[in-house]
Structures are given as structure tokens and as C-alpha cells.
Image (cartoon, rainbow, N blue to C red; front, side):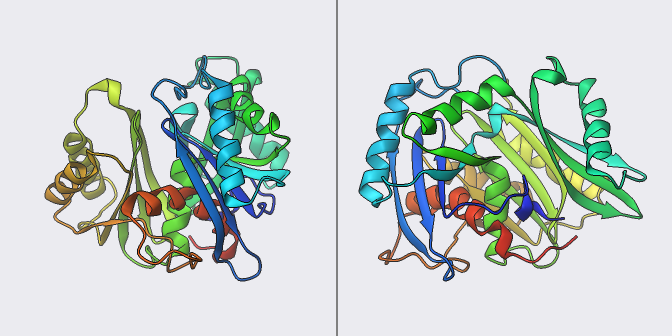
Amino acid sequence: MNLQRWLAPVPPSVAVEIAARRVTVVEVASPSGAVSAYAGEGLPEGVVTPAVAGPNIVQPDVVAGALKRSLERAGLDAVRRAALIVPDSSARVSLLTFDQIPARPQELDALVRWQLRKATPYPIEDAVVSQVPASTIDGRVTIAAVVARRDVVTQYEQVLASLGIHAGIVDLASFNVINAVLAAGGSADGDSLIVHVAPEATTLAILRGDALLFYRHRAHSDDEPLGSLVHQTTMFHEDRLGGGGFRRVWLSGAGPRIEQARREIATRTDAPVEPVDVRPAAAVEGLGRPSPDVLDALAAPVGMLLRDRVGAGG
């Protein structure tokens, strides 16, 4: 699998994440790969409401203002191109398995769109679709396909555009948390569980080495407890994926409930639960002992910016 090459182009040196409760900007210097600048700012509840349809950026001026101040504090206010990270809830991810896939990219794109058309609740012509090989098992290739409404993606892009910034790449938060784990060498062998907790939803992913075997996203409005989600995922891992327990478990997220989430996950998996820490992959200049909230804010942007620096696997 090569999550690091999601959406293909070489990423810019600056990444912007727009999440439900915060904006974050990060710069990774080249060629050192160190985090050379970063800043962020919290957002009031209801300003960003991630969803697959409808208004996501409810108050664009508030979001743009927070981003502008963050860029200024980081010394990045002259940036004109950045990678953009959006919430998982703004898109849908499907793992599609094929006995064989077309060699030509255009034919693969048509095949993926045909598969997604059946499960997409709006015309596929109104969607932005991206795909990347997730795993190859017994000769069968699984594709991780992302579909998002074009008008939803545009809402996030327009926040950057209002500040004169072009979003050169757009990607999901959870994929870049995975990239951060891979870049830091956190999934070198065995099976790993990654849990990404956002204010509005939780995403769970299972990696075997660097191959993505499982992806599940659930909105908190579904009233399904985290412990239940983790238990179901653990059972699927054992029964369907031949897993004998997770070698490592990674938790991404911040806020008052994160420690409770850590305890619930540890109980369900019988494995230590570790925060996603980018520092083994990218030194953070001027950061001595970062708080858990700072490390969490850095995870997805740094994962995005380092994704092409990790060797392909799977």
C-alpha cells in the first residue's frame, strides 16, 4: 500500500487542516524534514459542521479569520500554495476488492466510479473521486476509494482561496494520521489499530504493516459507544482477517474525553494505547516537551507533508 502518495502530486511544504473545532497550519522544511513552523486556533462549536452534503463551513469569515491569524503567528502569511486536510465526515471511504484491475488509470477510474455509483446517494458526476491501492492479498487488489461532493470540497477550498492560497492537494484527516504513524515507523510489522476521534465522529483503521485492511467511520450521532465500535472491530480482525490481537494501538484526538477513550480502547484490545507522535519522523523546532494537544494537532498535517518520504510497501 502507498497511502503516502494519496492524490499523487508532490505535496507543498505547508499543510492546513480545517477540523470541526480548530484550524492548524504546519510547515515542514526541505530537505531536513523538520517541522519549522506551526500554529493553530480553536473554533467555536457550529462554525464547521462536517458532513457529506450541505453546509460544512457555516461561518466562512470566522474560519478564514482563525486561519489568517494562525498563518501570521507561524510566519507563513506569504504562503500561496498549501495542502488541505478536511474532516473524515466530509467524504465517504470504501474498500473495493478486485481480482484484477485495469492497467490504464482512466479505465481504473471508470471502474471505481461504476462501483461507487451504486452506493453514492447523489449523482457520481457531482463527486470528486480518488483512489489508491490499499492492499494486495492472494493476488486480489483492494482499492481505497474516496468520494466527496464537489460542492462540499469547494467550501473548504474557498476558505484558503479567500486568503490567496491555492489548495494544491485535498485529503482526509484519518489518512494523514495513518501517514504520520507510518512515517514515524509505528507499523513496521504485525497488525495495528488506529483510532481517530474527532468531535463529530470516530474513524477506525486496521493496518497490516503498511497495508490498509479495514476502515470504518461512525458519526457520534449514531449513539454507538466507542467501546462497542472497538470491540466489533477487534472481533472482525480476529474472525475475518485472521488476526491474533493488535501489536500496537494508536489513538489520535484531543479534548476532555480522550483519556476515557484511551481506557476504553485499552480494555477492549488488551494492548497499550499510544498517542500519535510525529517526532520520530520530524523534529519539531523550538518544541521541548509538547502537550498532548499540540502533538495531536501536528499529526495529520505532518503526515500529509511527509507522506512521500516513506518507502512504499504492501
